[in-house]
Length: 285
Length: 315
Image 1 (cartoon, each protein chain N blue to C red):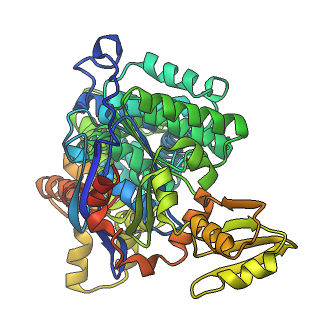
Image 2 (image 1 turned 180 degrees about the vertical axis):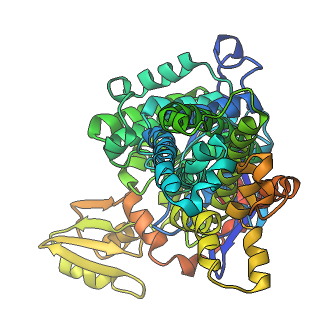
């Protein structure tokens, strides 16, 4: 060994601008890193903008189709029991689509480009990265949902006012629907992030996430077997339906009770993420 | 300082790295040589804690990489220049890394300046040439001002000016007492940049030591002999294990025998010699010889287990 070491002078820590004791990973730092990472990509802005646009446009479309409903005598009385907030939340499913893609891309994009190696080299404990990604995703999903809800409220106002359905801002029912939408979208986003971390491939993750979130309920609804219907009622979309209605409508067609919905949606968010966290440390990056 | 002890990594059936033991000392530029698939990149990933070894251990500056309080201060790595999100700017990429360690943005600007990326820092990485990506990778490696640098093929795709720059940079970093471990498939580059070498093939170490030691460990090259009576000399030298070729009239390339021996044979036979010059094997030749069939070296004394000893003997 001695031939290899000539004991050369080390750089003096005093002259080193980075020698300060505070230069080491902290969760706040990792969170800031993830924040910069996400906002420095155009695809993020596209995903957020299209989420807001789609939710708003579908809300507008369902508000405009109210006139068709009232023209049909068979459906006309349904409008009596309708809450304006439900019309506004009508674009929620479509928002789920883009939010789920964003959630998956947050991690699969790193595996696809190899950036994950820089990420894990900087944060070898890895789990804080997943935690930071989840937090950033929650914040962005919340922001885009609130923006979408506001936009939907504004653009549907004209139509809804004709039927006296403009949701009152002091009505708890309104906030229940907004909160339910927010809760469900965040759950969907975290579900995708968990699936993405487990599967790593963008195509596989997006396929699995969208199938479970959006495709399966419609597909399985053709099968009229009790046990299949039970499974369907626990899929994210039907399970979240109780959260997207005002209390009054809960009894009409919602599959699960509010409480059960909250728990089921939380499970969709947490279970894949927890599994991902457990395996993240063991697998090769 | 990088220390590997019986480091082994298997991917399913394939053994990428097989019981590697080595020490990379601070203050040196150590070149990591080996043909494609030899296990260089795997070894570097294992050092960085990105892949888990199947068995064995590797430490950097005394600890497994992941256990350092400030990993980027300890080790800066360039593993794959193209492993950056193409949609992000060079500056944003560096800022995301800096943020995790609470490294100030001024340091990001500093490494951008150092690596000559100032003009391209806000452009998206997707449009970068390989040379530009290498500069970004080196900037990322330097970000934490680390004590140890691990660079996988850093000069790949660089223009001559860039190659010159990397060469000087790694020498300067080593002169400051840092550990520099870099791989390259360019032998000539290694001979000019590295002062220590670690040669691997099929996951095994096949040679280690200073550049000169590695060259010398290879059976010495041919001896060039010029004589007006070359035909007689060739006949006198022709014994078992000696190869003789005559590239031109009056000149012989003699292998498998020392220059001293040839001189004695010529003297005994009264043959005049105009030239008697041992031809030193180039690093390129030594490397080709060492790696031509890595498997055959498995049972040689230069295998992984004995590297440390071998270095000891070489002092």
